[in-house]
Length: 170
Picture 1: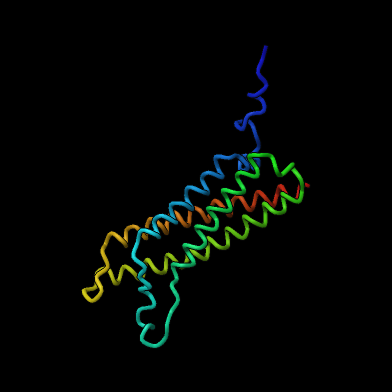
Picture 2 (picture 1 turned 90 degrees about the horizontal axis):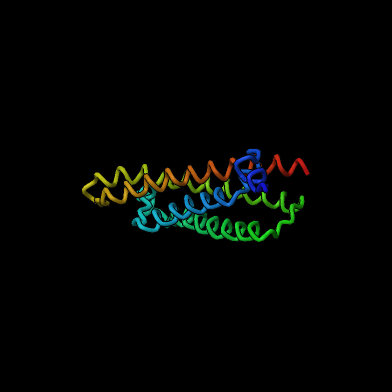
């Protein structure tokens, strides 16, 4: 008596199908959650816009980073639940929705990563300054958030490419 689960296991699936596995969806949530936690644990600096505050009021650039990380974290969790419960029924409509969601998430994360990197670079100047003197710990946390944000961007982009390939196969 042989078990056919080995033949149908995720070890022997082609690469585009590997991206549908729950482990990769968990990786999206983990990296997005790390960005969320790291950005939330720092002091909002707006260091790159400090010179402009005398002229005009500038919105918080890290607010967009928080929105993107929380939005993608929640939506990817809901996407994971839908796919884990079999709600997609392997239809072309869900393949299109999968492609569009991951494209939007990749573009959102790319924009948030660039904003966060800009703020981190500007924070370096103000960390060594005696005028404001942000703690060096905030700078280190922001560096980690930038790294995880770009990793999440890369993962969403790779998933978007393979979702497009799967969408074209329908």
